Image (cartoon, rainbow, N blue to C red; front, side, top):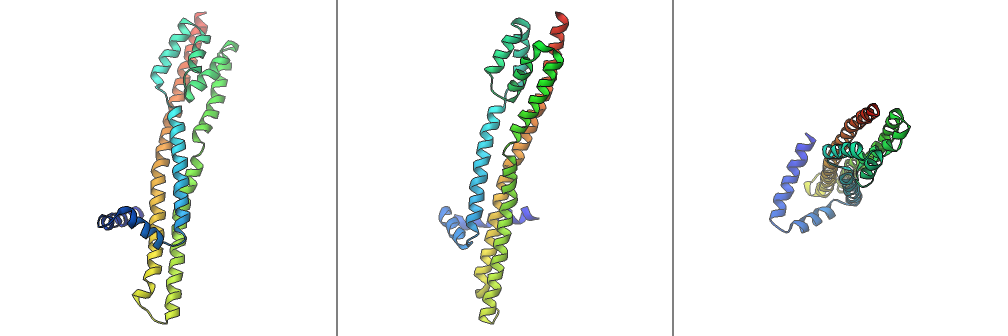
Length: 229
């Protein structure tokens, strides 16, 4: 229901913006929203800044897992652990880092390599999830600020009624308008950041899943090499 109401209000805003400059219309509505529009705008800017930073870091953590696994196995069979480590050092991404940590301990035995992979995998998972808590915070704060602006606007409307000692739409219009605008903008900001957050969570889950699956393949390869020797 909340999302439907916001989308309906947003469609109305777009329809009104078509009759004049969109930027001018948004500026007018922003000014009408009152003092709570500024904190909402700051939350939007900070949320987008964290989102773009996370988008960049996750793009650097991604790698073609299947091709990388094939290349590592090829290096292990032809050049040994040292050649596989060089490949990991020249490849970006969480999976390459985890493989490198495991191969560093490969000379100590497969069990030591497996333990290193598990330990470093947990570290990489924490790195992948870094910053998501802040985006989640901004998603929660934006509508709270909007609802606070709503309450303040309604209080102002009732104060105007009390001061005028009569009930008139013109008296309460500005307060109600301020209340609705802060709610609308707060929810729109939360919805925008929620899309980013959901994308990041799904991306992290995919990287972690690939990392766990590929780590099992690396351990199996090390076992095979040990048996061959």
